[in-house]
Every structure is written in C-alpha cells, then in structure tokens.
Length: 136
Length: 166
Length: 102
Image 1 (cartoon, rainbow over the protein chains, first blue to last red):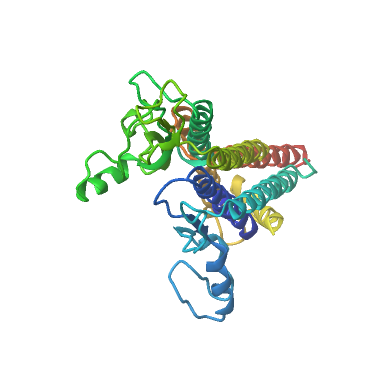
Image 2 (cartoon, each protein chain N blue to C red):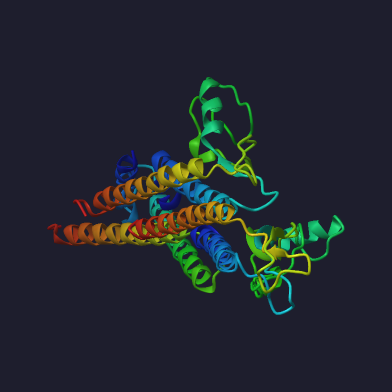
C-alpha cells in the first residue's frame, strides 16, 4: 500500500532512473578522461536515451522487447542503459578519446544530475506536504 | 568504495597521478637536455611516460586466459609508481591507467665539437636525444589532461553535494 | 499524481477499525482494516531496514551511490510520517466518537 502506492509513481520512478543514468555516465566519462593517453584504450560511452527514442515510436500494444516498453506508454523507468565502446574514429595521437567531447559530456551530465536530484527532492517535498495535510 | 561517484573520483585521481608523472618526466628531460655525461659516462637518455591499462581483479582472470598472468595488457619498466599495481586492492572490474617511465631508445644526437671535454678522439660529441619542442608539446598535453581530470573531480563533488539535498 | 494516491488512503473506512462495518460486512470490516494497517506497518518496517542496510553499506564501503542512500532514507522517513499521520487521524476520530453523546 505505502510502498507500491506512494513511491512507484511514474514521475518518481523516472527521476530515480534518470539519476542513476547520469551517475553511471559520469563514471564512464571520468574513465575516458583518465585514460586519454593510455595506449590501446577504447573510449566508452553510456547509452540510455537512444533506447527510449526507439521505444517511443512503437506504441499501441506492440511490445518490442521485454522490459523495454510498456503498452501504450514509454516505460522510462523500465529501460536499462548500457556501456559500450564509443566506436568513434577520432584520433588524438594515442587513442580515440576526444577530450573536448568528454569535457562537454562531463558538464552537461553534471547539470542533468543536479537538476534531476533537485526535481526529486522537490517532489518529495510535495508528497510530504500531502501527507501532513499542509505544505512541508 | 570504488563504485559510483567515489569510484569515479578514484579513477580521476589515477589520471591525475599519471599526468603529474608525465610532467615530472618532461621537466627532467628539459633539465638534462644538454647533459653529456651521467654517472655511467653516457649522455642523458630521454625518458618517456607510458600509460598502460591496469585491469581490476574481475578482468584479471580473463587476462589470464589470454596468456598473461600479471593482469596487465602491456609491460613497461616500472618507474617510481610502485604501490599502484592491481594487487593492492584495486577494485574488481575497474580499468584505470598507470604510468610507467621508460627510456627512449632513439639515438643520441651527434655534434661535431672537438673543444668539448666530453668529445671523443675525432671531436664528435653525443648529446641527449631530447627535443625541447617535443617536450613542450608533451607538457601542454599533460597539463590539459590534468585540468580535465580536475574538472571531473569537481563535477563528482558537486553532484555528490546535490544528491545530499534529496 | 502521487497526491491522488494519498487521498485514496482516505477510502480506507475508519469505521471498519471499530467493527462498525458496512451493511452486510459484519466483523469482516474490522479484520480487513487491521490487516491493511498491519501490512502498512510491515512495509514501513521493511523500508527502515532497507535504509539501515544502505547506511551500513555506505559506511563499510560496499554500497554504490549516494543518491540511492539518500532516496532510501527519504522514502523510509516519509513512509514513517505517513503511518504517523494515519495513526493521528485514527486517534482523532476515536476521540470524536467518544465525544458523541450516546
């Protein structure tokens, strides 16, 4: 009742998922940056948003992949991200890490994480207000 | 504590160490660019910082199946980076970079300078295989990479602080 | 939204707690409400445990993410608060009933 009714709400689950995605992406980006001059290193990336875009186009009762898509609705919270090789042909002289791209990803990801945690805490505030019958 | 944001900070720290080593190497090369005689009588030989991947325990067993038992993809002459090997508790599954310092095998420069005390009988002098321009380029690259790793640490700290406000 | 869900908790009929069930309900009303309350307490307890585990994990260096720990802490706190409010409301209605002149 409490657990499944209160904290599994769509928007809350989405935000919790997003926070996890951004944290993971930071790890991957930090690793790329630390290995910018490592011989034989292959740049990695954490994909998540791409899996959502495909899912969005196939609505109306068509399940493409178990766990990827809920009927009639984009199942953000059910989608899993993955770490892949970036498959980039960039050459920095030693490997395929593009430091400028990594720095950009670092910055936007940082901000996304902070926005998501902020939204999460705001939502919790509203819920607490509803619980107490007044604004918390 | 090597997953999540803390793990990322450790990774960035390893990157910082590596770039610092590289900058030290560049500084040493530049300082010795004209050293014609070291303790063993030969000119100073340029050193290079080589970044290799160090595999965590989880990946070590996989490396073992590839015929390598020391968990490293490549081997280099270990410089002053002892204690950073995979055995000291590095997290399973993490891949970070370690820096080894190795001598540059390219030839010494030869210059005709019979007046120099270290010149040989025909008046030829062997000079270190250090090119200041190459060293400066390396220094700039190292310093840029260092700054990038600092940014990564800053990001992680800010993200962590914001998560605390949930 | 989530607020709707909290309102829906109001659909739990407090009269059932006191055995005054709906017509035809008899004593069954009391049991089901007590059941729900029991379940809720169990869930809150479970969430507290999860929160404890998260904190232990964080201190011992195993658990991964700071946001997971904070989320677990926040949600278990809120679940507890919800239970507290439910208890308070029950108490209020009990007192009201007692005040009624019979």
